[in-house]
Image (cartoon, rainbow, N blue to C red; front, side, top):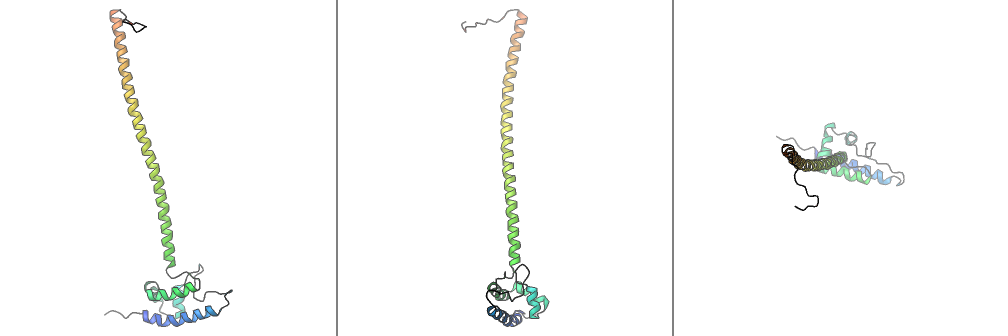
Length: 168
């Protein structure tokens, strides 16, 4: 058998508590108001403080994060007092995680662009090697032809006819 929900019990304690805290907030001098809900030093609602002040079972603090009706009641009062709502730390951590993810994406993009540049440079170098290899092969054939021509001159003693004016 399932245990009965503690949410009605929490709300029975929470609603009069919040009404009293909001009344104290409204009664305070608008220029010197200080949040009347328990808060952390960084301006967020302290759920542990709320549970303590309400006199609830300390294990019930999880319900302030998980149960929407409890969270909404506290967050409404918190926003009135200028406090960050319950769960805002999770949003901060998500934002931090998003910032870290964005930084990682930026680094990856930079690495990707440097990898792309390196890849393009490699392709250019390989093309240049192919061109130089082809040019080298052509020069090697020219050297072989000239060596054969010199060998023919030394064997026969005759110089090949060379017309400096291009006339035969």
